Structure formats: structure tokens, C-alpha cells
Image (cartoon, rainbow, N blue to C red; front, side, top):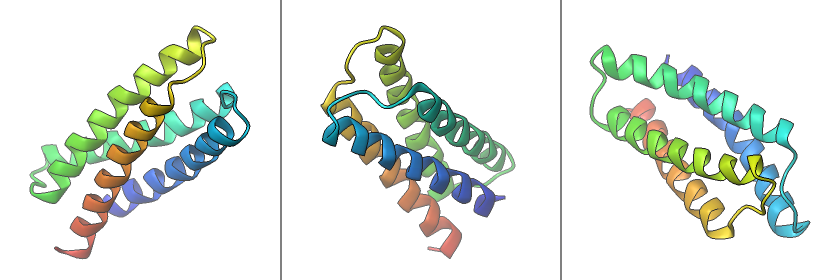
Length: 114
């Protein structure tokens, strides 16, 4: 279950990296379809982690879930800019990514048995 969540988060991370590249190198917002796929993969993985936590997974899994949930709120914040056709704030993109990458590291550590 955790490996599936990690795989989905990895797919979401690849989409996030592509979107960040578009945002910072091409100086425009990424396409909405890419943001949608990124969010769908991340939300699916987040639900799997929620299920794991509800089944008793604690420790690093619970911390990873909490941080991914926080990153999701940041994602909603960024989507609000998309919906208003406004440029995404660079600091918001960076903070969203840092929180998600930290959560991903915790999830990988949990899978590895740390």
C-alpha cells in the first residue's frame, strides 16, 4: 500500500518538476491539464496514506501524511491563481515543493524501515 502511494507521489513529483520548469524558465503558468494530472496523482496517493494511517500506521507514515496534507493546501492555494488566470507566486511554488519533497523523504524512510 505504501509503495503504491510512493509511486503515485513520484508521478506527481515528475509533473510538479515539469510545472516548476515551465513556471521559472518559460515565465508562464503551466498548462491546466498538467496541473490537474499532478493534483489527481497526489490526491490519490494522499487517500492511500490516509487509509494507512487509519489502519494504524504511525510514526513516519503519519508525519508524511500530515506534511503531504499541508502541501495539498498549498496546492489549492496555487490552483486558486490558475482559476483566476493570475501568475503563480514563485515563493508559493517553492514552499509547496519543499514541503512535498520533505514528506516524500519521510515516506521513503518509512518504507525502508527507519
